[in-house]
Length: 196
Image (cartoon, rainbow, N blue to C red; front, top):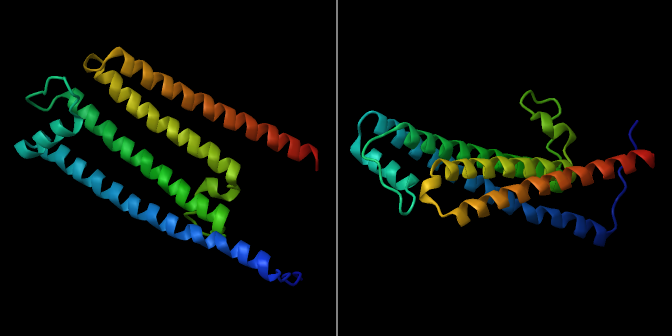
């Protein structure tokens, strides 16, 4: 037998209800996700079109991956394909990040989704909290940063050494931040378990 739900006093009930103010933010992220899906299909269509010999698609790809000061290739080559595919992977990783923020944030900060019996419930959602969400977001950001760094390394000859060093330092900072978040979370969890 379940206990009757305790009724909140008016002021705490109002303050607790303000969590729904975040809902438009998550709906906005869903719209951003739609933009990324559209961008992905445009880039994929251009890549396929360029592979099939469409000159307009090829020119669009060259503009999309152009690095200032770098020579523009005159045909589709392995490096160009790799840069476009890395761009597509980048879009997918950012899209995954959006899904984590939308679903995890809604579940953590607004309301339960009650997906326990749903066959498509993400594995990570069963134990999501603000700390787990921070760690997962940090790992996703590191993945996105890795893709950008790889794209820079592929075109290393077109960048000044300072730019490459700066991007590498930023990536290392992301790595150290993720390690610090994970370590802090581990200490917090251990302290919490010891107190119980």
